[in-house]
Length: 223
Image 1: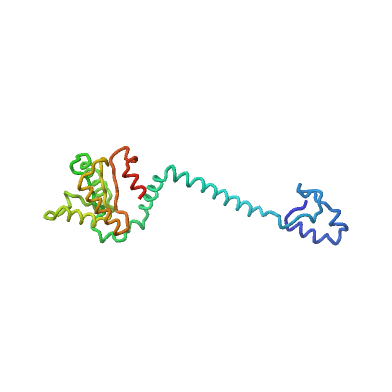
Image 2 (image 1 turned 30 degrees about the horizontal axis):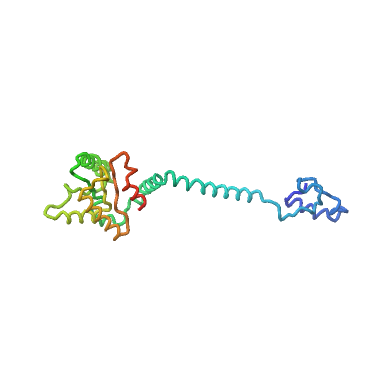
């Protein structure tokens, strides 16, 4: 058996002087590709390392699987994975120590249309309660127009102060086809801050079941 192991090579070195006609008369019985050939026909440089072969096979299989799975997941559920990634990132301990958070008075400035009673009810009785009252030490500080704006200042002064004193500007919309003037002005200020600070400060909340098809949501996804 013409094996590739070091034992076979040592065997040849020992018996080459004791066995006459060793190169020409002694033939390989196995493996099949060397059967009938001289025992010196084995090229030891072509011997395979099984461990290396399995490692190369595993690496190539992993690379091929990633090359197929990653684009497919990105195409099918890229938005969901992006959302879950940032949601998990927000729960990490070091994320709780927000750099520069002490310099800003509010965590979020909530902008919504007060004329829409359903939206106002959701903001005051659901969003505010969940973020300010039910989070314990991790409670957030929200800026609300009717509660936190200073009387005596103009609308634009209060609006500017709220946007630039909050880490995020949260827009709560019931629909995206009709937007009030206050929402438009707030979005322009938030966009200006985004360009100045080079940091995304806008969060959209659309209270509709089919909001994922909204052109505004698709635009935010691309941005």
